[in-house]
Length: 501
Image (cartoon, rainbow, N blue to C red; front, side, top):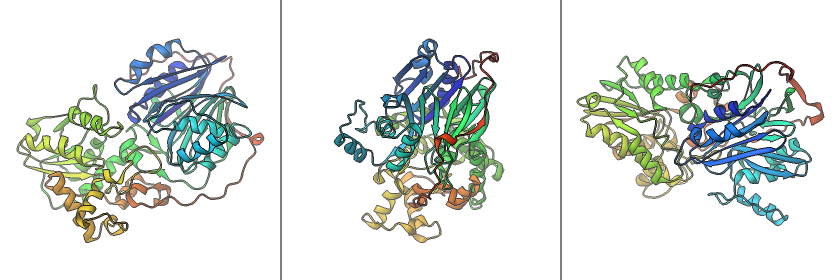
């Protein structure tokens, strides 16, 4: 997953853009990029695989000038993309996965278009999206034509001379949220980017909705859709604790997940409750609150040096980060039965080799693992995460139990069946843990608090979201003004330097 941020400000926007984009660093590890517009576009992209966003972009943001801009922390490819189209130049950042990217690129090549950007995925998805948009009659029509063409998901921020266009993907897999302060409007993937930049949330974009942010305020260019299936994994793992999606805070959902896990654990006796840093901590806190057992930290993360072990694209890098980031505390572990709350178990190798092993090596008496979501059964179709069935520990378990790959895994998905129980037992033995108990789909949905049909649960259930519903087109000339920022002559608020410096 990537994170995107945009701002239109009275005066120079680059400080706000710099810090707002930086608050998405937990979502990507490969590239960062900024684009700012004054009289001309200024764009900068840096490789972040061995460094932090702030260190790479500090000098850039100090020299960039403009009152509107967009930024991205990218999990895979270089962004933003600049394109000089028939309706003027623009820069664009994206968040999502286009499943049919190669097919669409081949079609455009046959039409005489060319691609200049190099990507690890062969086609730079953001460049592809930009060229699909350029085929429209205008930017709004182009965005809608792009939505029509792609399979998967794609949320977009597009910087043009008119302002910043914000378009949320049609099923709402990924969020986009509008914020306002006295001298600026902003749009973000993560609302955690708002508080220290003094923004207040004013609107959660609906799936398929297109908004234009300009010096005059914000205006709706296309209404949203009735179909909404946001990724549930945002609350369980990928989202930042301070962020909210659809008005629901991440930290509180994780605490509720932990409480649900504890309610089903009446048959074990433990001394210590813990959570695998960072995203497992709130799940562990909820478990401790419900169980009455003390929450302690047998494993601490060396935060200054290492990010998430889930997001790097190579297994070698993921393993190195997993090994180095968690440091065990023997004095907390030795002689204790430990509950380990984890956001999820994907491949299982890191948990076994670099987390569980450290607990056993430090003298744990028992190790009980409690993932906050059900077994992951299918690779994500709509964002960048696990891309192969063979990587998933649950599918390895099924293959071992069946002695071959099977197409119908419905009984393994259903937590009430004997096949599911055998699968979980196999995974527990593979992880070398005392007990393993997964969260159920229903408990996870209850913890989030949205209706089940409003969530994308594809990676757990294998069920795709409902088919798109017909929508009524609203002509761009009937754009609906929502609010206006103060007139340009109003004094700018004092310069802020947020706390993450």
